[in-house]
Image (cartoon, rainbow, N blue to C red):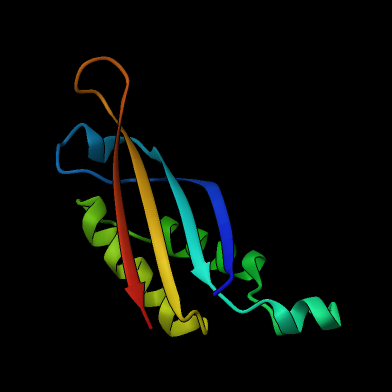
Length: 116
């Protein structure tokens, strides 16, 4: 199976469990790996034969900006559910990263994979 990647999509949103996290937006980073057979698109040079990653990015931005989650785990799960319902993606791997201040500048990251 071929793969389409959408990497380093950065979106500012309110997320977190602590009161100080709820007062200011944080920048989340999203990386997607989507299974897709690109043969038809490659043969025809027709965007309707492939995954429109521009439309996928717009859906992600709208979803995340409208969200009000505490946990990145919940955001990731609900985002995958929405993407699989809205787009004909056979399998999706989502990596979500969030800045954290544990000891200096750190990043919390989760990776989930979901089939259609």
